[in-house]
Image 1 (cartoon, rainbow, N blue to C red):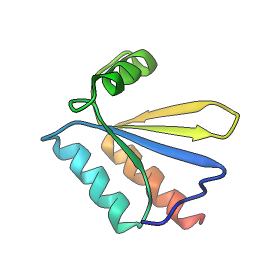
Image 2: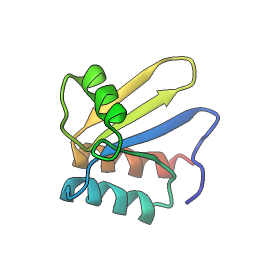
Image 3: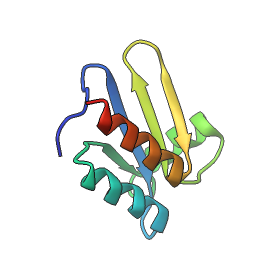
Image 4: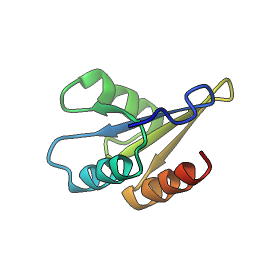
Length: 92
């Protein structure tokens, strides 16, 4: 997977095991040849805590979009995440 706008945006995907929605997002990212940092909330509880503090929920998948110095946006819902990734891959 290629690094997508690494100097401008950093994409972090929060997932858990046995989540079909998480698998869909991961498959889409792979097909689009996009690089995501993947954080499994079941393998590392600190990731679960990050997610809970940021969104107030433990539901996954959630995409965290870091935009340089302008903060972070949290995007839930697999369909929305896939649409976002598709639009990002077209702007490369």
